[in-house]
Image 1 (cartoon, rainbow, N blue to C red):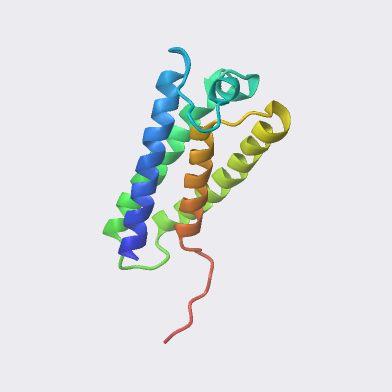
Image 2 (cartoon, helix red, strand yellow):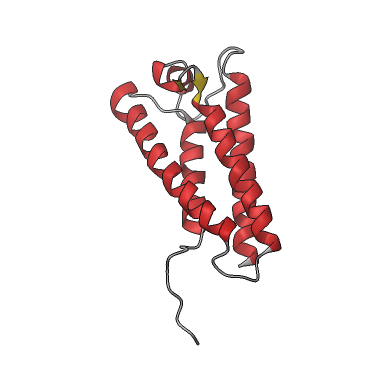
Length: 141
């Protein structure tokens, strides 16, 4: 369990770096996009902000929260199904739905992809898959 929590923290940290990079580079000119070539189209579209706040800042808040919860869970790793892990599971499930919607916007509306946004979607999926399901019953051994 400790390795799983540590891996969640590492993935969340990578997500924080990705989201912070997008947040800081968003208004400072073209973003280098080497694989997909659509980063600027995605990041300057009307779908890149919610209520005037760039979506990357929401991503930063999500990853910071998950990172913090993973650190808290590492101190409580002896108890399976602890409260921080439940929050990670629920938050990452919600973030997975939102990431899916945003990838759908890229694919079907914008017809352009941002490699940093796709990385974030992969990181969210990874966190969700790593987070133990809090409502799953364990059988005594």
